[in-house]
Length: 447
Ligand SMILES: Nc1ncnc2c1ncn2[C@@H]1O[C@H](COP(=O)(O)OP(=O)(O)O)[C@@H](O)[C@H]1O
Ligand SMILES: [Mg+2]
Image (cartoon, rainbow, N blue to C red):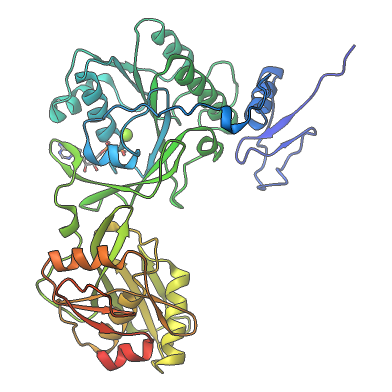
């Protein structure tokens, strides 16, 4: 008789082994190993290394396929998705509780339904009555929008045989479970099986599927990371429900770029595309010490932002350095540079940085503004709100030019700022007075 293959899998991290252990050697979780059935082992193999009979072709013989898309009737979501929803795609939307995942997707579901496409909203978190209340508030009622309050995958699959759906929303992946598997909802085996089944359905029947996923405090999807690898597109909400504007950022997109962000605002009628985005992240009035303005690029859009710094006496032998919306390591580097180059010693001070509006800065063009804000707070002297700082600061203290400076300056001029501090004078300054600061020491001189 053929020997049975035995495989155990850790339900926390997905580590697999042929021997049962009380403690996972990979993540250290206790009693988390579960034996996989042969069918589950098949899926593991399929998702890890797909098998098939496909033969390679010369690329010159391959005919390109245009990605087909339809609009979600929401400007910002279309933008993050790379131009609209791709039929047959599987999209994961993650975010912390209360950020507006259910609100956004119920509205999107109704937008799609109103285009005549049958849409199924599966909720494992709230009752039908609660969703109906929300639908009334969002003006999301449509006879093509169907509601299923269910946590069993098998029931969802059965529902799909009842109507020709073109879009499915799963709220949330952590509450859905398959009866074929004994492990708990949200565990690696469950999530893999469910995502695998949903992926198959999406591709076979060309149904666009959105999966909502909860996020841990650390900012990653709660439970297994394998989810991110399996789906076509991953979008995350940045920040939390305390922010006025909610930002949806693309992390992975098999059908387009991931550089764009979507900006939404929570209103009584739902989480809707924010208007006039470029002027929402700064205010020109009321200049105070510790505030400096910069302009960053978010995909194709320049956005003017306010960097705030607070430098205060520390009562601890290990002063605090804390940044929200800016990388902590980068802040430490800039502080070391201040000490070394500008002889501003901040080792007796706590330093806090905050980027207004809940945006996370992912580029280096804001370095100069961060330095300016820190110096301004340290000296308790305000910087004029007419000035924008644009520049990357290097480890040796020189200020470098940033990409797409002209687009940024144009935006700055549009908002009627008058001065820009840049690494090198641009050819076209769009009517702005540009000051060259190619070394951090010159920043002090200017200030
Ligand atoms: N009646 C209401 N008017 C305006 N906003 C509301 C109302 N009820 C709830 N909200 C907002 O909706 C948010 C909840 O959104 P929800 O979509 O349930 O989040 P998630 O699904 O991401 O947990 C709350 O943070 C709250 O700000
Ligand atoms: Mg929800």
